[in-house]
Image 1 (cartoon, helix red, strand yellow):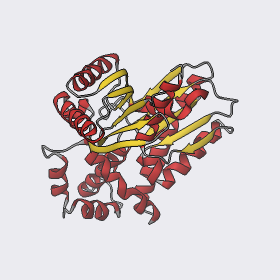
Image 2 (cartoon, rainbow, N blue to C red):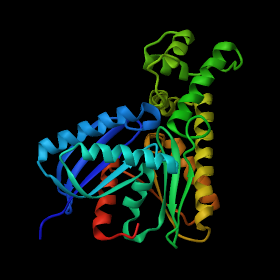
Image 3 (cartoon, rainbow, N blue to C red):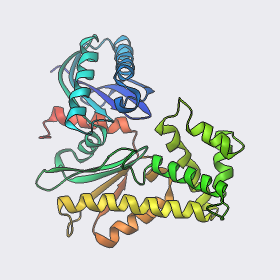
Length: 317
């Protein structure tokens, strides 16, 4: 029997990874490029990123026939988004040397969850990275989504939101609207190699600004929390609360009140902010004592590979 081949793409807001693997998990190719969320960089740039990765993948492997291609893309938030991204992917594949038997295009969090739950088809995934949203599959196979309304009206508890709260607090201190000094100021200024609030404003409103760059400011929070900074602790507490509200809303939709239900946590906020992670778990366990948490440890692309493998094996999703 000819070995089946999968192509997996994890297209996030910050970076895009493409991998080609066998049905047994042997990796033939893997490469990472820049982000591919069309909502933030535009359709033309997404096509450039995906097409370049497809070209490099074929030149490296010469594997023309792909059984399943799974594209997990940030920015698929509505039916219209789905159509736009599917058109982009179809165009990229048609211009490539690959022949794809079956192609899947899904929101990146949705695809990651389906990679995690596999044939059990039961569990929730809460992600807090640049943005924040959750997907869950109930015992009846129903798929629900909560959050993911974007940085203009949502993403509470995300890296972007944390970065925004930090910058807001620094401007309030500069104005004298908040008289409590914060070590966050020095941490942020050192990170950005700036000296004052005016330079911070210039950085924030420069033409090349991206949401991912503001989200990167959140990386200073754990150190400030560990130092006992009041502003940092308050931001961490609020982030944990916001994420717990996101999660509990999802759990209510799938009816898990008396169930030992698996909840998977992923994204930089859960991975690198111990206080937020611990508080989040406490808040959820107060409402759902039997909930079990698993912090995702693998690279994001690994879960998309698993998603494609489940498709080959006949998972009903």
